[in-house]
Amino acid sequence: MTDKKKIEVCFTPATFPYFKNDDAIVVIIDILRATSAIVTAFMNGARQIIPVGTLEEAMDYKNRGFLVAAERDGIVRDFADFGNSPYNFTPERVKNNDIVYSTTNGTNCIMMAKESYRVLIGAYLNHKALIDYMVSEKRDVLIFCAGWKNKFNLEDSIYAGSLVTDLLKSDEFFTECDSAHASMDLWSIAKDNLMGYIDKAAHRHRLKRNNLDDVMEYCHTFNQTDIIPVLKGKYLVELSNFND
Amino acid sequence: MTDKKKIEVCFTPATFPYFKNDDAIVVIIDILRATSAIVTAFMNGARQIIPVGTLEEAMDYKNRGFLVAAERDGIVRDFADFGNSPYNFTPERVKNNDIVYSTTNGTNCIMMAKESYRVLIGAYLNHKALIDYMVSEKRDVLIFCAGWKNKFNLEDSIYAGSLVTDLLKSDEFFTECDSAHASMDLWSIAKDNLMGYIDKAAHRHRLKRNNLDDVMEYCHTFNQTDIIPVLKGKYLVELSNFND
Image (tube, rainbow over all chains, first blue to last red; front, side, top):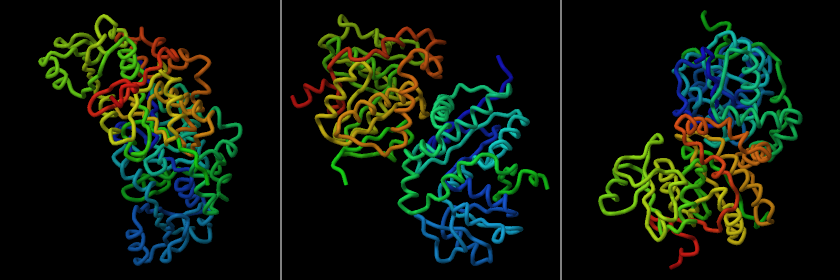
């Protein structure tokens, strides 16, 4: 019928098993803030990112001399070097370093997807690079929203819609996925006033209560870098270094 | 802060555990076709509906003399009296009868929600009655979309948005739920051309392939009855008979 490749969108880790497709490129999205922070770390010269799920693992890496970004509920942990905000990943701190990034949700998503053809880290910040790569690869795409505690969230879902919309502009893709259609419709409503739209999002209010919403505009800024972080074994590296 | 009651929307059974709220009224939605068919059966005089999950259970009831509606992949099962379409539940067949309705997805949702304050069966067909009841009860509301094989689906999600939109017109409710906001936005796009919108839905195409889409318009028709089916023990009865 068609040799086009399919696009699907998974709104939460709880439904990932029903979308599992090991031939696909999986793009993980956690706009506020894990994937935005990871892209930023590479922009500023980080060599590798080691995503860990628990604070115990993060502490273990710290004891072995690694730089560690770790916070919970908006508070930097005592043992950590800095917190999880993209603003913490300054060139002074990260350039040529390996960084441990502690994130329950994001790490969980990466581990769930690790059997896939590629696991990419996606954000507004590297949007065009993601699109160009996926169009050139001509493979199925599964956009994997981290959500919030296994629930759907708005900020990841609308960005998924932006990705689907731009992928479909090439002739390589089609979608019959209801969540992909929904994400495009949400994006069509949100795109002309992103900050106003995102103000509805529950997680935005959680960040605001913790005075962490200074990164809102930054995390919703398109195309600041061509770098695509990709999973290689247990580490994230730049896609351009994937075959080294 | 507020004594308003909260509205949440759960897009798929896979995420129901993260929304579980035993004080809430849960409205189960499976527009194509289980909840539309169940409402229709009561409109046409059915006394009780017995939802069962497996064909084995359905067959067991059949052997005990019950009227059984059962199909899989659009084909009525040999042992059953008729299939699962709303059009099968004619007054001639169902009036004053107990009916067994075999539906994997719908029955699963009902069982997951059974500890809740009330489990209601919702559809466009009984929309206004649902809204009036929930406004009068002044309790938390959890709208539970059956989805499709644990994935998000468009037809249930947009109807969830219609319910949320109308509930918020009363002063009794608020929502901070991202999926509730998303469902309202999708409803706002879909509502003026429901059939055109739903044409995107994957499940609509599945029904079409099986020549089962004759019920599309009927299942998207508002306010054909004031009857609200409610779970009482293992059976669905009319809400007006709940306390009998």
